[in-house]
Image (cartoon, rainbow, N blue to C red; front, side, top):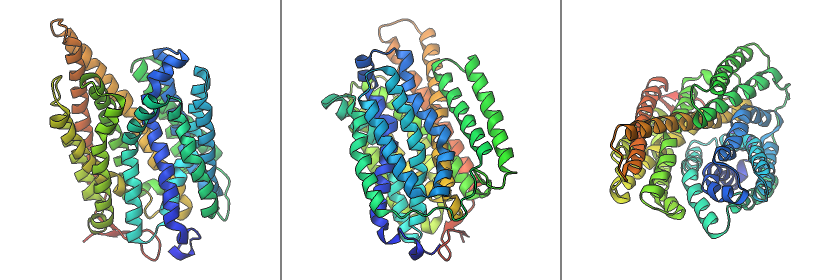
Length: 487
């Protein structure tokens, strides 16, 4: 569709502001609640084993419903799924903030995941369909990619401030301040564009995708709290493999699939999806273990820890804008994503040199800046490539795949790297003489082992994007996004 036939086009920069606010809320919510967990646990009196469900409930609902949420936006119009997601997310956040029991808080977090699965694909789809001019598209995706890369760090800082100054409950209430004004603005600015034919929803595909993704995320979450050999872990992962295999078989045969396989068949989009998932696996190690290191080894407060991540956020913002506006149109996504993966691996290698007496300035800060530059080279090209050249009617489900890969990558990273960390700590402690400093030394050793693995994951990502993504430039032709071979 030519740019000026889009009813949202004349209001595109205001719409970008709304999309950016919504994306920030979804991304920072992944970490802002983590900072509040110790205070919430003390207030509501739940156990350490139960604490994980505050995080898992959101991940299960969000991860399993993303494809369905994206397809609903394609069929019924993204204005209403976007606004519905914002309002639902804010109501669920209000319930969670006012929770007087563990069960209510877990239920509210699951509801946040449900409405987040409706909101997140709609946000990226609106961005992809609103900005079709190459120069403007680069700028818009640069902003979106910077938010996606910095939201987790902002969540750490904001969560620390709200928890220390006000209460853990404000880590949930803050979503009301973000979502409700955004919903009002979206109602006034967006024009709904529903699928003209309104085909029937692919119910078998929706059931298989939802249950398969649920089983996958649950299996990885259970492996973190129990073990890889735990019966529930094995059953869930086997069920996930069977259900998702059945899903792809069904999608090949139905007339109106939930996920048209043509969305995945393109090498550029497929490579982008893979790159986003792989980066999500490795990036988890940075936020989780580096947060622990700064708070327990360097004795940083939650606010200081959040401030400590800001240089990475600044590096992402600067790099994302430079890459999106100036470099990506010239060189295409492959070299940027390849270099970004290598920079991510290099940052992790720096962190493998951490010791109990290392300082923030000499060891942590250089790695964070390098990681920021790497993520600025990965996220904007990946987001543009993931929605590039796709039929307008499929933009929502393509956007949902972006979020699905991020969520699955985070779940894999959580389970895999936490398990490796725990094994490394135990092995180190059993192999060394018992001293007062052994526990701290063993813990830092566990961090460095996890960072070594994360470096290897980034290196694998470089190989994957280098081999899969073709050499193209993202140049729309006649208002339709189509890849053009790079010379």
